[in-house]
Length: 96
Image (cartoon, rainbow, N blue to C red; front, top):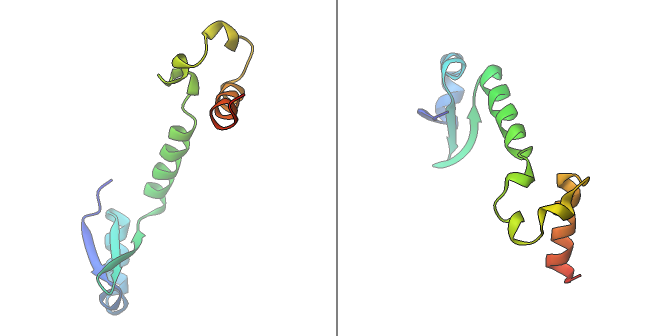
């Protein structure tokens, strides 16, 4: 998703209905004093972005290449990805 239009807060106030219609079609970046403040987008686009972020967070940690450097896979049997990651973090931080 690419932000195409930029609009200042002042201009948005004066032409709100026009910019609401634009935000339904494509994301709109609202600036204040030249700095990015808010992105306006329609609910469908928001849901797509939100779901994509959730899927990225749920990536299976076992597929990460760094895991194989620390532990043999036989020791991972019957353990969840979360448990393995937690054990590796504890060893890295506390030297267990």
